[in-house]
Image 1 (tube, protein in one colour):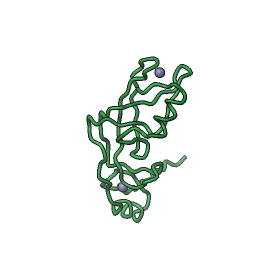
Image 2 (tube, rainbow, N blue to C red):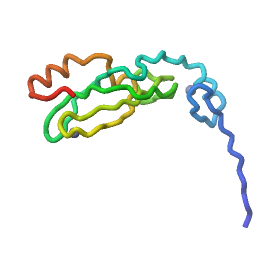
Image 3 (cartoon, protein in one colour):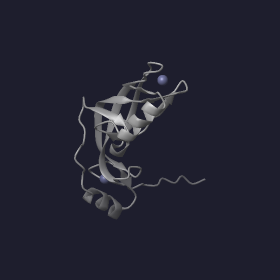
Image 4 (cartoon, rainbow, N blue to C red):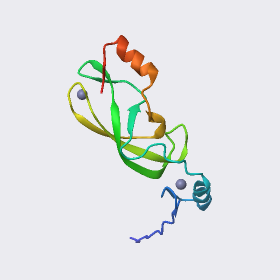
Length: 127
Ligand SMILES: [Zn+2]
Ligand SMILES: [Zn+2]
């Protein structure tokens, strides 16, 4: 039996700390601009969508409890170096307090009219 020890070399982006096996990719990542944070701790934000609890619709009004980043997002439509927002909200139906992390495209600074209209039509609650 032979013991094999392999050295693994990784390159880390100094902005978002994402690790790459390839130096070129890490350099390219570092060149991606950092988007300015849109929200700060304590801000009130709304989810971009309606939620369902106990068979009823509601529209969560959330508080930003932490701004995380810059982080790299492949999920967010904006892409690149962005900030992630940890938010807290209480479900108006069951009163459970939720904490979730959102990319900027998943939250807005004011309630979306389409969601407000949906709530009125379906007798939902604003949370
Ligand atoms: Zn990066
Ligand atoms: Zn609930």
